Length: 101
Image (cartoon, rainbow, N blue to C red; front, side, top):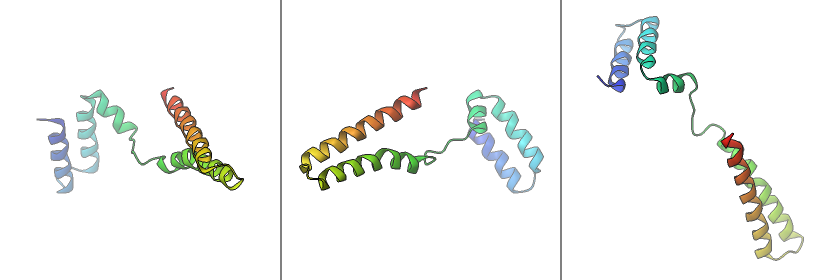
């Protein structure tokens, strides 16, 4: 039986009351021990949405503020936009490199 089907079966048995909470947890742990990646991801779940808003603010806010300020202070729009895009690229590269370590 595949890992997914085993977990679905356990979940169904738990929902119907055929397995207690402790029995369900023990059975699920036994299944996940067979697959090391599953154990790792079960211990440290990751969601894609975690940290997206702070990352967007950290990446987009400084270029917008710098480019907008440069435009208000009289720089041509194309130069202000170039400055903002350059800063955005530098921030994205720095965030990418920070994630590699």
